[in-house]
Image (cartoon, rainbow, N blue to C red; front, side, top):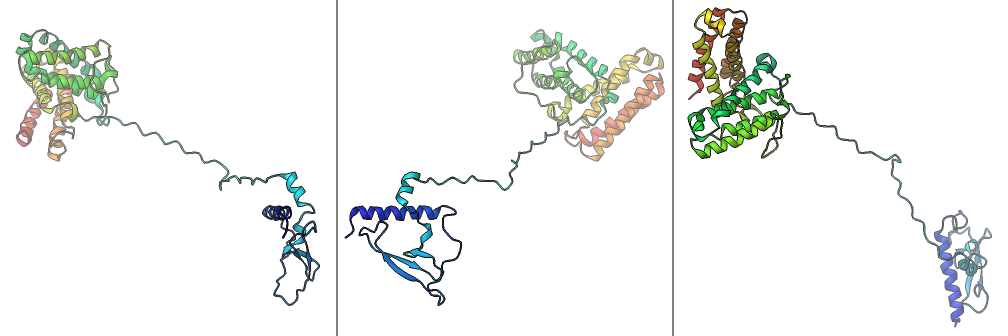
Length: 355
C-alpha cells in the first residue's frame, strides 16, 4: 500500500495538473490527440512508479507513433519537472474577473426632455386691445372699486346695495381675465389671476342682506384692496391663469352690466347736442358693452358654441363698432343706428336662449 506521503504527493501533482489545464496556453500542443482506435497509430507503453520512483502507484507512460509521450493518457509536456516546487512558489491561483464590456463603448446619455410649450390663456387669440384699450379696462375697475368702498363701510350700506355686488365682482373678474391676454399694462396686471379669483369670490359672497353677507363681502374686498395697494393677497389656492371665462365669471351678472351700459346709452344720447356733451362717457359705456359682449360669446358658456348664438354675438359686435365710429366722428345718426341694432339683437338672443 502506498504511504500517506506518497498519496499526498500524487494528489498535489494531479491538482497542479488541473490548475494548469485551466490556464490559457497551458494545454500543450495544438495538434489533436491521436485516436486510439485508429489503425495508423501505434504506441509503446511502459510503467513508472510515480514522480519520485519511490514505490508509488504505477503509472502508464505511453509513446505514440510520432514520438509524443503521455502519462495515463495525459500529454507528457504539460507536466512541470518539479510540480510541487511550482505550486509552492506560485501559491493559489485566483481567476481574474472579466469586465463586462458594452456593445457600444460610448456611454449613452439620456436626452433631456423637451420643455412643454407654455400654455396661453384660452382668450389669447382675441385682439383685446382693439376691443377694449387698457385705459378703459382699468378705469372700469377703478369705478367699481370706488362704488364698493362706501358700500361695504357698514351693514346698513351693504343692505342697500348688496344686489349690485355680484355684478361688480363678476365684471372685475372678466376684465382681469382679459388683462391676462392684453398687451397693455396696469399696476395690478402681474396679479391679474389673483384679482380675477378674488373678484369672483366677492361676486358670490353677497347672497342676502345682513351681517353675515356683509362680513363675507368685506373680507373679499379687503383682499382685493391688497392687490391695488401692491401687497400679496390672501388666497386659498394658487390661481390658474389658463381658464375660460365661464370658469370665473358668471354670465348673468355680466349681462346685467351690459344692460346698464345699454340703458345709459339709450337714455343719455337722445339728440346730437346731448350726444356730444356726454361723448367720453358714451365711449366708455360702448366699449364696456362690446368687451362684455365678446366675453359672453366665449364657448365655455352654455349654448355659446351654437352657430345661432355666435351669429348674435357677431352682429352685436359689429353694432358696437358702428357706435364707436359714430362717437369718434360725432355722427349721432350712425351712433343711434348701432343702438337700434343692439336693441334688436338683444331681443332676438333672449327669445332664443334666455329661457
